[in-house]
Length: 221
Image: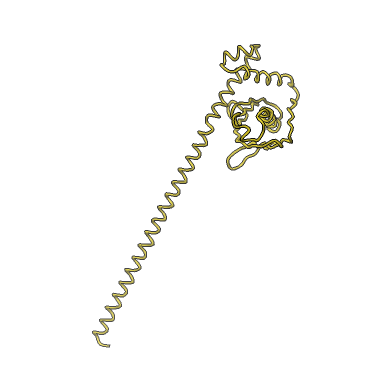
């Protein structure tokens, strides 16, 4: 091999090596850009997930906020009504002072009289036909109460430990009751009474009182 041939081969080898190097760099740039896009996509997916989670939490809170406020308001009215009842005021007087229906005051009076009647012994609970079953439990979304009987069934959220009540649980309002439970509307108060009394037996050692509202039932210890 002559010197010129050797030089030509070396030159060709260097050129091939440079081409291969350029290809490796180009391929590396493609991989880098692909990884960069995937990283951006992952960051965007995380941002969306965090935003969606926060939005869901806010929507849940907003959906329950008015119910919590209503339960607190009812609790305060209940305590005021009870105090007036205990000092001998009439339903009419109390309803005017507190700007509530006399039926609301009568419910409080019924509770006060029942508690007084059974003071010192466990109150007798209201029986319910239809082989009813109540479950108080927890899942990944929080606490719940479910009711099931031969007439119908439903499940609802439950919140414990507020400043004015032992527990508050949501219920279908009168306008939605039959559609959501399958139970006749005239059975609504009996069913909710049964659930509230069951809760008191299971969680409050048989003690307590309760109020049935439009959207919530509030149980007091």
